[in-house]
Amino acid sequence: MRLSDQPLLSAETIQGRVTELADQISRDYSGREIVLIAVLKGASIFCADLMRRLRVPATLDYIRAKSYRGLHSGGPIEFTMLPETNLTGRNVVVVEDILDTGKTTAAILDMLDADHPASLVLCVLLDKPSHRVTPVHAAYVGFAIEDRFVVGYGLDFDEAHRHLPAIYTLVE
Ligand code: IMP
Ligand code: MG
Image 1 (cartoon, rainbow, N blue to C red):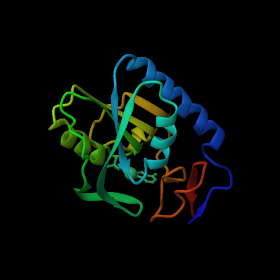
Image 2: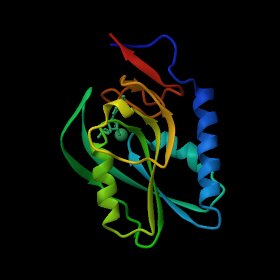
Image 3: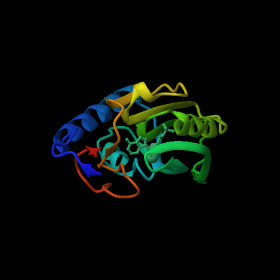
Image 4: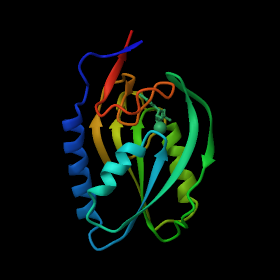
């Protein structure tokens, strides 16, 4: 396995879209305060860039769910970290790297909804709609992509490549 020669999404393209998403969220939540919940580890880099461009007050917390083994998701979802923030009555934006089958994200949303937030929406950098198994609605989507395994900008293959500023596909 190696990285594609050309990035699927360049650093400039990603940064431009992250600014647009931050603008959109800032408009939608104007006059309100939000709680960002970044899904570890993949969303950490996306969330850091997104948060710095928001123009509404935002606090930050994390959730961590383990479900993904190598190239294929499967098995039950296990929460290895939960937010410390009390989400009751808050406006929550879950920040996720990629929406694939939707199983992990659906489990995360169910878990957070149990706290009865005032609102709960999902912001994903990448969406692979053709791979969806569990229906999940994302209020904010950076890019819809084909069903290819991608790495970089927080996304990993067995923990490698998260540091890359662009997003690449893995090729044989
Ligand atoms: P889902 O439960 O199938 O939607 O899986 C979501 C999680 O799988 C994401 O948060 C990623 O951690 C991981 N994942 C899915 N597709 C990819 C990919 O193309 N590259 C890297 N990680 C991925
Ligand atoms: Mg992830």
